[in-house]
Amino acid sequence: MSHVFSPLAILGALTLSALAALGRLAIFTGQTFAHMIRPPFYLKEFGAALMNVGYFSLPVIGLTTLFTGGALALQIYAGGARFSAEAVVPQIVAIGIVRELGPVMVGLMIAARVTSSIAAEIATMKVTEQLDALVTLSTHPMKYLTVPRVLAGIIVVPALVAVGNIIGIMGGWAVAVGTLDFNSATYLQNTSDFLETSDIVTSLAKGAVNGGIATLMGCYYGMNSGRGAMGVGKATKGSVEAAAVLILAANFILTGIFFSS
Amino acid sequence: MIRFEDVHKAFGSNHVLRGVNLHIPKGESMVIIGGSGTGKSVALKSVLGLVKPDSGTILVDGKDSTKGDHDAFLARFGMLFQGGALFDSLPVWQNVAFRLMRGSLKRPAEEARAIAVEKLRRVGLKEEVADRYPAELSGGMQKRVGLARAIAAEPEIIFFDEPTTGLDPIMSGVINDLIREIVVEMGATAMTITHDMSSVRAIADKVAMLHDGVIQWTGPVADLDNSGDPYVTQFISGSAEGPIEAVR
Image (tube, rainbow over the protein chains, first blue to last red):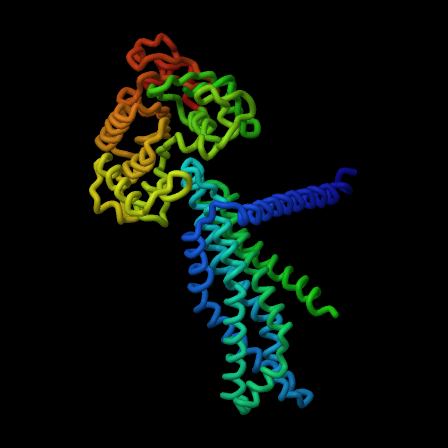
């Protein structure tokens, strides 16, 4: 009998474990937002987080979206040629980049660059008792470390998405005009005519959610890391995995909410 | 000033503290000795709220350490961590002046820096160290910076967690002497945990031996060699023979 029930037992244990993890994450998220609205506020740390999450991510965001936009133009042209619809390249590149690929690619790049760095930094601080030192110096680690980073993620990632969207579209434009014989002015006009304000707003909203997820995961895994180098490594790996999956899941849910009608 | 009353703490099945009772009067330097993993750090961190005891009470000036304004409570303490626990992202002077640049003790940056430089001088470091980052310093210098940070806000109570771990004997002696001088000069109450006997003899007014989760012996440092307690005798002689198991 035990063999029959053991898969159920395993499933039950996994479910309980997943729910417990979800609960811990929910509490951490709630505490983070609660601390955001209560002083003290660490403006210097917030400014540093804005630079780290935003400004220093620009090169990787720019290159990623540039190549994505170019590849997208090639794919749409090749696919469209099967039913004589090559002319839709500007419109599909624009909608594809702004609605989906821009926010998702930026989110994933932030997860790779920022989430990992936040998790490793905070986990190392925990291992070397720097978090304890903060407490003894009357400084709440969540206020000092988590709040500035998460707030910076929510505020600056939409700006990165906006930049990424523009560069992605220009990547498509460069390929279309340079290799597919599109007229430059017509391409840009079609792009501009096709995009709606709601596309841009939802793109930026996705960016804010993705920025929040990426930074929150870095802080959560860093604060809850195990001991030693292995603990830091596990925290870093776990944070990137969790951020990437949650960003894609959130993107799916938001797409359903924004565009299902 | 600090009183442990029947303090218990377990991590899973590992009962680290099994009823610690200890009193540290105001202005006294108490050193807690004991083997590795006997709960010395847990006892110290329990006072600051970094570890929450399962039961028992810790009183500071007769008040429960877990009640009241915790920030105001912590402002009375300075602490030197075992590894220094300096903030890598900040230059040395900002580490030392950390408490003076935030919260209720906040003051202008220039004044905070001047105090930091003065505290660095007090622990034997030159002004040029102030603008370096912790990673650029040797282990002994990091300990000194940690010590400067611990005393920067002139606390009433200072905790030292394994102050000489990882240092050579000469640097250990320098740190021990500094700790003793500073504690006497400031009139602070000090609680040190260590298993380095040279630190014990240099720093302590009184010594407490923690083993098996309880305080086995307490007495003046002068009585340490003639304590008559088999745990203390074995510990200070470093013998494998005695009531303390060599393999734990």
